[in-house]
Length: 433
Image (cartoon, rainbow, N blue to C red; front, side):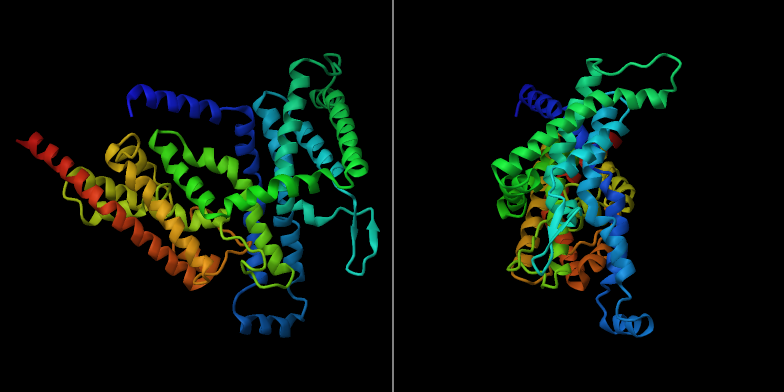
């Protein structure tokens, strides 16, 4: 690829990355991370896979000893869509230079307006004046993204055009900000009411249910398919090779779907069913990517770091390997990406994309045929070292699968590293001569 064509591609990618909506989506959905991690701790405590311990706890505290733990889980991880809609609208307004909390609150109100605020009990009785928890988690994720982006954009447009109530100079800033939000808030919420009326009376459904069936379900199906997995996995190192943050681009767009897949898996367990593909379980979740595809960082470079330490002959490669192996154990690989480098390095283009993609495919089929269990709602920080993360997420079989993925990385990178290392060694020898 010529330099001119590469620059054109980079410019196109950067324009996409810098779109206000993409930036707001990437930055806003991060607000779900603390709730996800905290909820995972309590979920893991409530579902420790060791029955003698569970029986002992039940004998000490009673059969309902897990109820407080699930109370925390349901109030953190099970409201991810609510957190996302507030965070996305908040970041959109903030990035546009406006007071952001008003946008987040309006987005939350709009999200509630899209719901039927009633539910049907197991006996068929309709219970009014309640917010169905079903839509607050994974099933409402795409709707929360759409509402967050639209509210953030419309709210910012009104403030950019100065279509607000202006208060005198002596009014405290906090009060002035709230009056500034009145006009955009009134317009947005009124429009939401008409949208609710249209879907309820014309289509006999709700906006959030419509989005779930028409948009979210196909998107989740795509992320959970083999072809979708291959494409999204390969695109991350592909963008990184051009020096563009591939994780921010791909996961910024797709993370909502992967989170929804994980929450759906946990919902299956909560319903008392076995977490299997036959029962609607998903293979590809956000934890799937973190635990099996980006071991050592984007491009599955943990194998490359190991090879540099143990097999490299040039001083340059050995030194970089020693510098990279530590961070690599915590899935941080900027020293390799920019120091080796991987960026714009023709020698490393193929293994950089092939290693994570092959690992993803092997992991996909390992779960598909039942060799490794599907991932539950439990998640861990992305910096958790391999093997440890595998044991937490899926027991010894998941940890063993991580070993297989690391082995794949070592095998794929080996011939390419040997060639690169020979070139580096030759350069060093010529310099000494």
